[in-house]
Image (cartoon, rainbow, N blue to C red; front, side, top):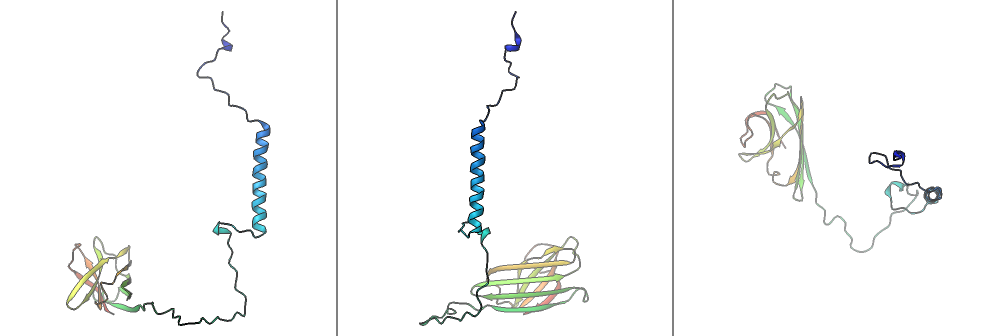
Length: 186
């Protein structure tokens, strides 16, 4: 007869190799030395490549400005941006709607911000248009929900020639303004 206690079956779990105690002690010792080294380095003001350890300090009081020699004009290549603001008037809701717009342009850049408190448009969209010279141009559709709506645009300057601004209620998304809600002029 065979002694089955000495036979190895496939379902029997395998024994993991033992990690020697001396190897485990070496790993723990190396980790402790690394932690102590990093703590000592940060406390003694050693340089670090990590930006999280950087600290800002106030400059000393009483410093005098330094005059630069030569023909140095740091503003010679700068561009002045023209900024304009307007409060739009309600032409649909009898004064219940409010909106303001701000635009900045210059140096080939055009920035437009429109913020509005308008009645909730059920299944329709609010759109922002610029107008002038007998033509109107769709900027984009406003984003928001409920009564808070806004639009922010940063683009190349294609719109600074238009002085009027409209908010319309749009049932179809096309290039034709539909029902005027707010109007203003920069």
